[in-house]
Length: 170
Image 1 (tube, helix red, strand yellow):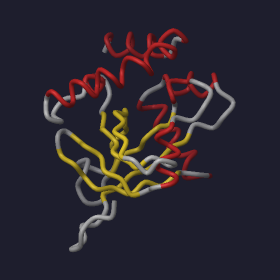
Image 2 (cartoon, one colour):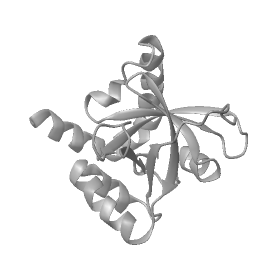
Image 3 (cartoon, one colour):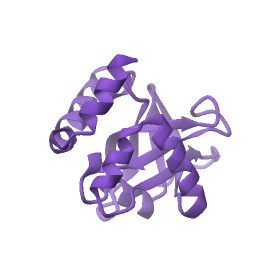
């Protein structure tokens, strides 16, 4: 589709990398709140979730709108999940949410208005390499982001956490 290619081209620019981290999450949070979790603006082009994770240092709840790559069937169903890409729009440092997941892998994602308890796992080695190829096929601008930075972009697989009978830890 021509519109998708245009968005991919724009999202690969350095100007987008400078502006997007300030604009996109703020707009996503506002629209997500106003629609009671039903809409993420950025998800009109790429699937998206709102990650709800505890801060690595503060322990406070953090809500971060993120693009994602669904995998394994209907997202949120048993045996399915999402890939989260710590691209930080091609900026030098890892995004804060990746440190949060490393410190506290049990989190929640809001997917189309539904809160789903998940567990995150950092992908490494051959598993990461295989998923990275799929991510590049899914959204080619990630290759531009990776070429721009010296760090390896973190990839996380998040899957539904089994429901327990007891209260959730927090």
